[in-house]
Amino acid sequence: MKFSTKLLTFSIILLFSFTLPSISFAASNGDGPLSLDMITSPLGIFCLLVFILAYGFVMSEEYTHFRKSKPVILAATIIWAGIALHASGDPSLSTHWAEGKFKHLILEFAELFFFLFVAMTYVNALTERKMFDSLCSWLSNNKFSFKKIFWITGVIAFFLSPIADNLTTALILGTVVLVVGKGNKNFITIGMINIVVSANAGGAFSPFGDITTLMVWQRGFVSFFDFFNIFIPSVVNYIIPAVIMSFFISNKIPEGDGKKVEILPGGKIIAFLGILTISITVAGHQVLHLPPVFGMMFGLGMLGTYGYFLKTKSTGKNKFDIFHLTGKAEWDTLLFFYGILVCVGGLAALGYLKLISDDMYITLGATYANILVGFLSAIIDNIPIVYAVLTAHPEMDMGQWLLITLTAGVGGSLLSIGSAAGVALMGQARGIYTFFSHLKWSWAILLGYAASVVVHLWLNADLFDLVPLER
Image (cartoon, rainbow, N blue to C red; front, top):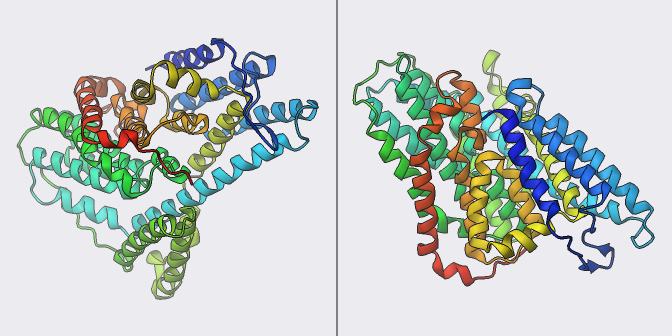
């Protein structure tokens, strides 16, 4: 999809929101109103257009090479400067109204930032210790047929994504598909699509699998173990298109590259520490009712301590340095999350996101609205969409929160541009795995999407009357 088409679609969606009848938001607390009624004001429209322009640059990053974090950080600053300027001159608002709202956003971002920072550091450590290279070597040199590799990479992606996240999983297994399928364009194309679908489906039933699931978990709408209620729907979402595509994969056995990769010292212990970190994080959140960042930072401390002893034993190129690994974190991605959260928080402060709960969710109903979120996730990144819904906070039961978690996670598989995994693999297999090669199989992915929603509605019917507990 061309940049102009994506930008037009996104603009129509948002512009439609502020042309709806103006709604007065009387809800307030001791510090003033929760949001302003400024959706049709010059300031509101200006801030909305600033966000649309910034997100246009985000969607065109592949062509302009203008990193996505830069425009959203600028937009976030402009939006909140306008809000603060208005608030300072409004006698009905507290002097520190804008300050309080902004500080709340920073706290939310800090929790998300440190969680992702630790997760990225562990992934970088395992990569540096050649854990993932060893997996690639094993898969490409064991005389598996193309069809068997198709299924092995898909299943591994499904179960690795809930731990390592869908983007990292896609890049690791995408390398395997490229190495094994060298010269076989059909296998590479279908293999890449399979990994995107599998990684997104696997990430949907775990707080660690995607940013959207992490945000839902941190907000307390869904507990860690409640996510497993959508495990079977996630399996259905992956299996249906995988079965269809597998009929078009050859049983021929490819020739491996013959390279054998050994895991560097400490790799397996770091993997164990990663699993232990996840366990402590879950226990801290479920038992002690502390935010997930509590357990993740403890995990970073364990990795750093073990890294000290590992460093003293390492020599030459194999020398382990945790601070070198933290420097390799995806800083553009982390700063992008700051910009998005602050931008969307600004639109919420202006009153726009209240329209989501009062119009989209009441007019369409929660079920249809959450299914629509999945389709929007294929066009627009699912992070701002889900964060907008979380900020609007429509009244939904446990079943509906799990539904939006499912649809936002797997809906991005419908198009190659709909998820970080798809965009990353388009760059990795440039010219082979493309937007249009993915689009040829969108009908099969859509069948999986529809089936997963139906299975969730049927299998978890008892959860649609269960009110979630908020943190």
